[in-house]
Length: 413
Image 1 (cartoon, rainbow, N blue to C red):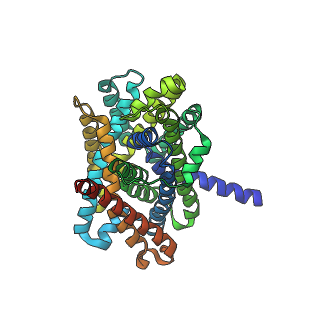
Image 2 (image 1 turned 120 degrees about the vertical axis):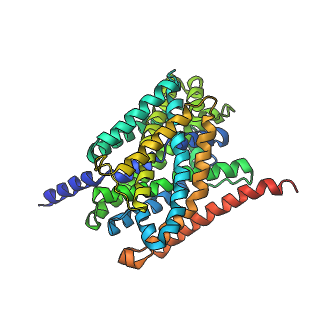
Image 3 (image 1 turned 60 degrees about the vertical axis):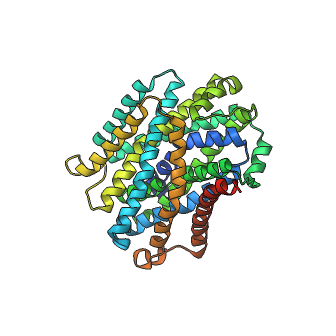
């Protein structure tokens, strides 16, 4: 009897698993890989402590929105409209759209950059991958799309191998994981904001909650979804950790500064071998492709929920035309910008992460107010400890942004 019960639980876990892992892993997208590469190459192991702190915050935030989805059966933008009105919904959607457009462009920048390591022109790679991504969502079923996304997540394992091949100084790495290093310099503060902004993004919260609602996960199944969410966040943190140490152990040690994840992959060749370079490029391609699929989806879900339009990849094109129109428009825009001549790929990538980091506090405020609403959540509101962590994170990001703005001004006096 015990074996049968355990087996049923395991089967239920396998059926539910997906939203948490896919969302958190997709956070390590093209811009994320570029940010983590630059963190490692420019600052060595010094910011690993911030990555650990940010991963912990990611677990807290993702768990909150997953809980809201299971308890209310509604998406985040749906709840914002109901509880705060159309004006605040418009502001929230504007914030999300600005951030998501920038990040979507950066995903196609990552696709172009990763395949250029294999000598494939962006004028070939970007249109082909853009069409395949669009076709997958428009023609695929929810279950098949989710399985493909989970399969793409496995490509991220290549970063782990690349990290070990780089032969890092493990003692120094683990020391900086627990001992904070802070510098009040504009570049250092900017990369701190970018690191937080690429690990905990506004779009992830909207996508995760919408995905849980579309999958039909209820409160009875939530304990399994909670495991999926926590495991996904931890695995995303582990992948980011190995990207940073791979670049710290090779590029930083050799005094090589880079401007993109593509440069990191190429620079690894003479320092860690062709295999490490190709593994890095493969990871970047998988990350970028998954991100380019999910970012437009996140925007389409959120905007359609906010303004009452039909949405979801389980619906046909004719059943949710606005949803698919938005998705198509974002794919075309993201791919089209990258095909422009003389576009700076790394500028787009890092700008996207900084925008995420600056805008994230506004979305966190909506989330924490909603999750503490007893009419919505009943006994499943946040504990005081949860609230402390989220408000502290919001204050930290606002403080970093203010420091970044004021440092150049103060330096003139």
